[in-house]
Length: 143
Image (tube, rainbow, N blue to C red; front, side, top):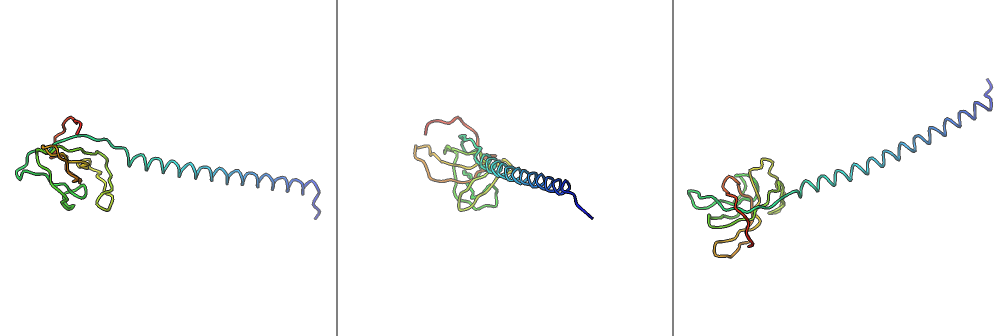
């Protein structure tokens, strides 16, 4: 069986096209991977920091205080207490790193207390999660 020179040329030409297509495919896949990683990084970072602040005061409770907790649920440890005369600066972000670990509130029922201001003008370094059921929103004043 004889192979003509035209057949060899055609085989090399086809092989060259296959190599070019494979190289282009590899480059496209590499570019798509980079785009994917950038998008994932952007959306993960963007969502985690999409927050806003608001001011509130603790509602009146039978015991006279509302607990601040280390995480956004009643079973987390109590890290502080606020009273009705305190004004609070709260953050609506669903995730927060505090007390040595990150906690997220998917329910939307908890907010993170960033600052506590007492009626006498002093402020406390207390921070923690508070159930928003026990907080009444007020207009923020320069504190």
